[in-house]
Length: 220
Picture 1 (spheres, one colour):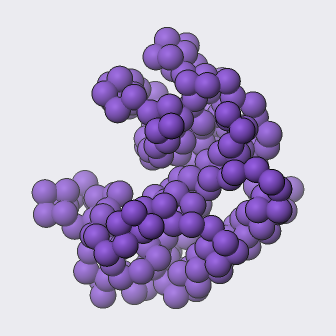
Picture 2: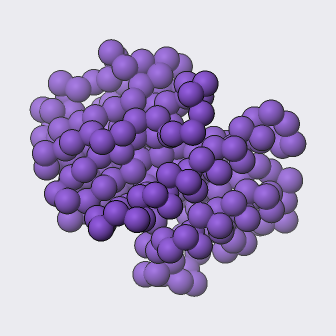
Picture 3: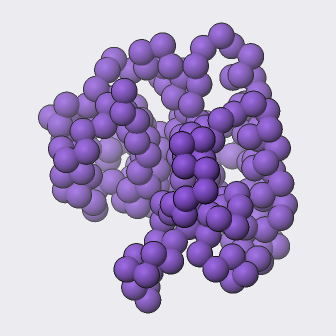
């Protein structure tokens, strides 16, 4: 089974790119983040035509997560539990072929310190509670998505430039370490323990060409 994660940064604006990638990469399951589309504007017909079932949690302008699957898909939860007032669409769960797939888009948190950073840390605490409860079931679980965290210096180009950024601050890395310490396996680092592998590059200053990137998308 081939599972992928993709921060699409606007599912409708980049639909042609997404469909081309689906045809080329042929993943069985895809977790999408940053749909930037309200619930009723998700391009389900195009996704179905490409051979995928889908569930999604949309939001106007920002956020939004979706799970695409070539297999039958059963939604088992949407919205991260723990705060009834949190209306941001950042979390959805599905059962696919006996596997619980969790697609998440963790808050960025910048500027830090500040309210957005505080929200990120609170979100992390809620995620840890939910993740720990998922581990108690006798079912395989995968946490997938854009965590907006670089766990170690290996995961960021020129880490000294990021020390005050919400993606790399010690409080965030400590929260991330606490989550993984519940018993989760970092899929990429298990396979490639020492390689410099990035999942995001900025649009400016030829960052991709210089491989000046970040590893902020994870599989656990």
